[in-house]
Image (cartoon, rainbow, N blue to C red; front, side, top):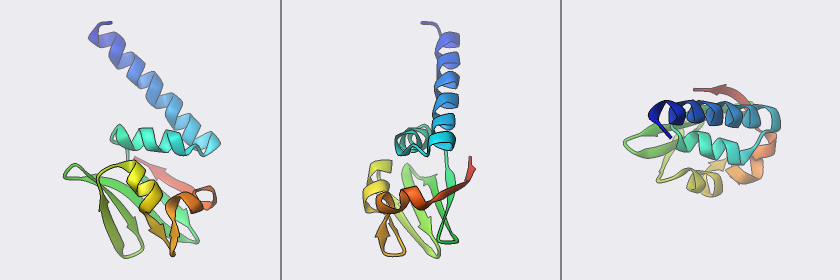
Length: 99
């Protein structure tokens, strides 16, 4: 596979993951998109959540609190929102923006 084919396949994969996240609220798609460098803003209980990148870490921000994690899996299972774990609240979150 040449560079052009790899680039085209990556674009197709990215588009498919984005559709899966937006249409089916797939946590697996969210994880892969974050691993690919994307960032997201979510809403939970009328409060903003963001998952961003800084210095090879993933930042999980909820209200006035920001935590640093080594990987997206750690955010999913350890990140807290209003005392609940991210994974437990995922189905109640709405996607505000995907960057």
